[in-house]
Image (cartoon, rainbow, N blue to C red; front, side):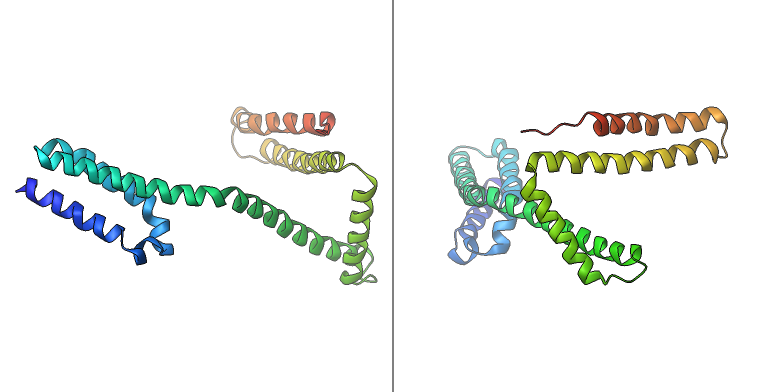
Length: 199
């Protein structure tokens, strides 16, 4: 019974997969790789149960499913590097917009609300353009990395203070909890002191 059922199910699945409407569907493209893996596993598991010509048919169908999946993966692979670069650029752009908005608000607060946030944005953009124009991009990235490391070093020092001085556990357990934070603080201090530009 299983010898008759499995090849028919495989043929129906293959027929559905090769329909043009199915192959060009966005949903199908998103599900083809996991589906091919499931179907392939099913063939590999059921193949020893089949006998004679059914075995050849199942292996032929397995080959067709693998070819289809690899063909679709090749189409995606051609576009993937560009999508990754675009995603990274958009991520940086969104962070820059958020930082600019935050800096405009800081200018407003520091100036005792005499400087409007819009003017703060303009000042920040002018300073950023001047900095990039006058300096080396790699030095600017290294400086930004060092400043981020310094900020997180300050966060580690706050965490160490809270962990050691304000904990309710014994001194030994507080020190044990503080050890990973202290190690991270040492690494961050090394980044702050010794980071150099790549170029």
